[in-house]
Image 1: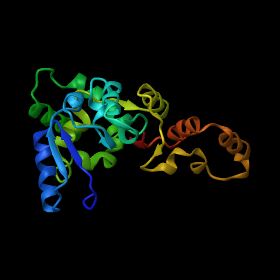
Image 2: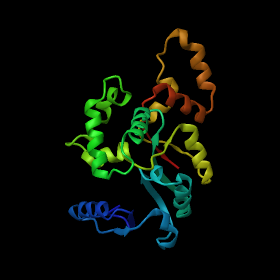
Image 3: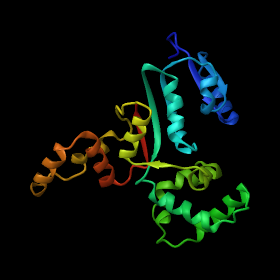
Amino acid sequence: LRNFAAEVVYLDVSAASLAVARERAAIRGLTNIRWVNDSILNLPALGLGAFDYVSCTGVLHHLASTEAGLGILTGALRDDGVILLMLYGRYGRRSVYDMQALLRTYLPADAGIGEKVRLTRQLLAALPASNSFIRELDKWRREIAADGFGDAGLYDLLLHSQDRCFDVPELYRLAGSAGLDLLGFVDRAAAYEPLNLLAPTASQADQRAWLASLDLPRRQAIAEQMGGDLSAHEFYL
C-alpha cells in the first residue's frame, strides 16, 4: 500500500517485536505506518478508527478468550471489512499438546523461564524414539533449534501458558460468535477438500459421491481429520 492513500496501523503488545518491525519498515522506506505499542484488548479505547482489513496471525489463540479477542477486532472492522486470521489446528499439533502436558507434569512449578527451557532441552535429548513429539521432531525442529527460533521458539511451542487449538467446526462457531462469515482458507486451501485426499479408485466411487453431496463446512471438517497434519488454520472472515 506504499503507493496508495492508505494508513497501516501496526499494533503490538511487545515493544521488542515492534522495534524489529519498525526497522524493517525503515529499510524499505515505508512511511505510511502508525506504530502502536499496546494490546488488542485495549483497541476500543485507542481511537484508531474503523479498518478495511485486519491481519491477526498467531495471536488470538494465546488470549484468555479467543472469542473476546475476535469480538474486539470485529468491533474495529468496517461493515464490508475482512479479517485474515491464523489459529492453531487441533490435529496437526497433537504431538505438541502431548509434550506440553508432559512438561506441565515434569517441570518444577516454581522454576523460572530459563530453567524450564534448560530442563526441557535436557528431557528432549533423553526421550525414547517412541515419544509422539520425538517421532515428529523433524516437523518442529526449526521452531526449537538454535539455528531456528531458538529458546524463544521452544518456549512459544512447548511452554506457553496459554495455547488453544481449533478444529474446523470450532472455527465456524468462533466466526459465528462474532457475527462473521468464514470466507475461505488461505494456506493449503486444497487440503480442506476431502476429494483431493482420496485416491480416485473405482472402489471409492460411492464414498466420493457421498462426500461431494455434503455441505462445505462438513467436507472441510472431514478433510482436516483425513489429512491430520494441519497444524494451523489461516482463513478470511
